[in-house]
Image (cartoon, rainbow over all chains, first blue to last red):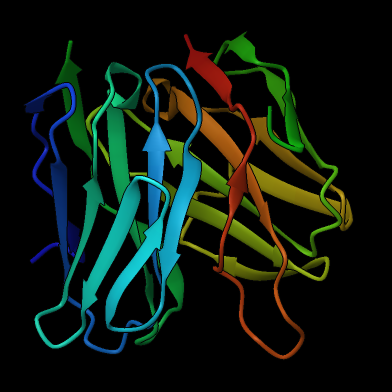
Length: 112
Length: 117
């Protein structure tokens, strides 16, 4: 089982819709979770961090965390074509060798 | 544009060459990281420096040698690389609260696209 799993996509949504990106992780002890956005040919850019169960909202972005289900998600409301990118989920692994593990990313395509 | 810069942005080298990648962060952070990003693979952590001390070495081959002379600068020295080392090498930094381990919110530089012939 991979430490951090994401559907590679592409996830296609029309402009104005809600995009839902999902991530599961294997380390039950993980406490820190991050979402990064990476445009093609660019470096990852931090969008959200979340540490507690529940929802965390920042503008059009909402991160959701459920530690019992080992599941973290990112919702993008009112999706724009400029949101088209690869979204990387990152989880801090606390068990054994501490490290930040990234998923392979989900590619999001927002069509006008 | 982030507060983390990397040079060079592109590098082509032969397997017998020696080269260095440079990273500088202007954010006043105290932890710096090297990552490798290959096509179709997730970002892989290579090295971590926390308060200038190397705290982690994620089983990286010795042909990669990091150096952190101060909390703002990080180097990755390369020698006798293999073609499979061709990838995007990313530097990141973060501000780690005293007493805590690294791996909090990280800010990435633009990366160095490395091609090994």
